[in-house]
Image (cartoon, rainbow, N blue to C red; front, side, top):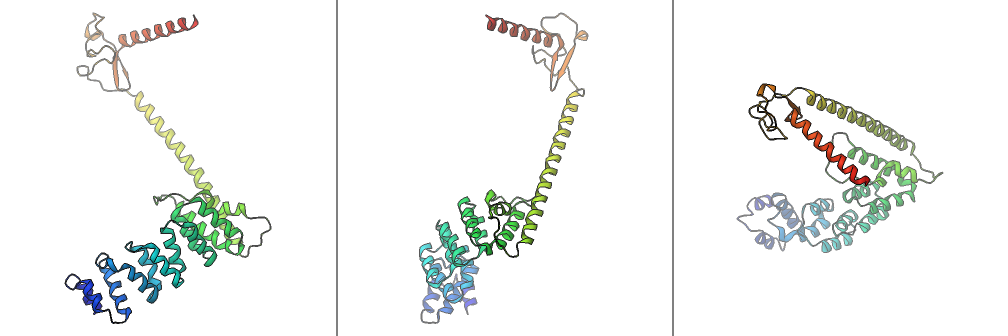
Length: 302
């Protein structure tokens, strides 16, 4: 019946269905609204706050995906529902949406001790203060260190994967396994940490090796391109004398400079990159520049 009503929601209005289900078990309203939202997110937008209450009561596991998918509910009202039902992860998500990220991280760490979710939460916001709070909390609770290192190593691998770019801001330096290990007080007893530390060292060694290799390849490519550029400019260039003008005097290079009476076959030209000039004009230009520099030198000495 719910599926039929959802398929015909353009014919049977949502308000009519909800009014008809008023005296029935709330599970019917929950099922109808859930199927309607899956088919058309906008059709039942006026009932999204009711859906929050129904999800919290009858299907808590589906509440968080719904909160992420919809924005048509008052955040404070939804937050109150989650607090009443003791839904901590959903409460942390809504606190984050409300800008109260510190409180959200506190719930994930203090109340749930869920380091994996806390790392994922901090990675969404990339706030250095959140990372600092997260690392400081774990250092004060050494039994959480291994999960933190494993999650940070996975995060570091994701962001540092060669050839990939997620487009998201990179984690701060404090969000690296190496940074956490440097801050670990000497003599801190941490069970099952050997394998995690080994992975951190292997990852750091691999990262250093990749950095050195990429730098070497970059220098080699730059040198190769520089040599090719110089070689290209040292080669001869094809010049159309009747279509090219001297860059100094402005006359066609097939004609003599205005100051000379020479015949065309006696004309000398010089190719400078993509420009062509009469040799005579080039020499005159150099002479004028040298004379100007000499005058500047004399005036400065005086």
